[in-house]
Figure (cartoon, one colour):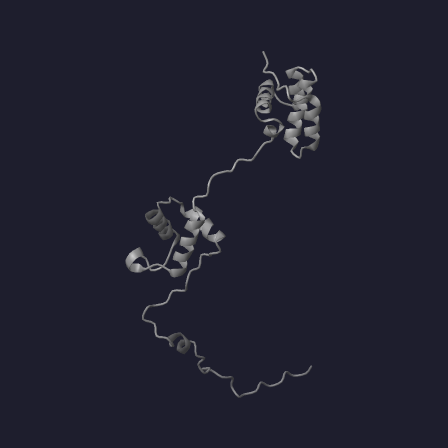
Length: 181
């Protein structure tokens, strides 16, 4: 025995709701259910909606519980982000301040160090790839400084780059002009 449709709706109201709807899926569902109100069988309604009898049954249950608005497909919220805005703010501040070697055990931040820091301080398990993507979205880029020896003198590079006088010069002898033929 099929589940009866609610009695406060009829085919005219469902078609009017279908006409005003901006959702194509809801319109298709409403028209299929309006056919049932007009006396069509559930099989014919399934043909109108392009679905199976089980799906028509599900539509009837949704309509009975929530009315025409219940037949709209809503997109799910999706997975929650691992890092909250508070985490991002603290992470940005830590990057701007830089690590403290005595506390953090590193002299510069790497992604793996930040992953470990987030895990230790906030109990947030995030992968290197995810954190790298988050950092790029926050406006940070992976930069590698040119290595410099710790004992390098301040003017050593400039002194090394000074232009030395040329060791060879062109000889003063002139070439004889080529004979004219």
